[in-house]
Image (cartoon, rainbow, N blue to C red; front, side, top):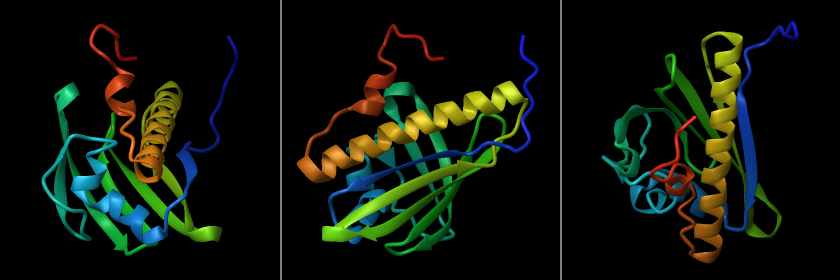
Length: 160
């Protein structure tokens, strides 16, 4: 067995170029009518600074509270939500790019637990947000619902 030692608490990070203007990509994240097309299935409302909403993944029987702590239109959204061992923070950064495109980066931080638990949480989060970004890209650029989140754990396939 290797003697592994973490010197920093890891964070999950991913990003993707979306070939749509910043305002359209930002709206896709804050508006339940759009975000439910590629990520979760229900929301109790639009993301607003200082407001808590409930997000639901009906296919998995999961519902979680989400608190928006920061909302800077067309630039940044920060939420706090429950993690495996306690709340974590998710930050979306929207950067205008050439030809009216947007680079959307996502960082999930604040994980707690043992080294093994941290690695698992960061890996799961990075994978999950990468699927969300791919689903967002397909939906906004091509109006295609890929069902990536729904199909990640189909019935009969054990979650890890």
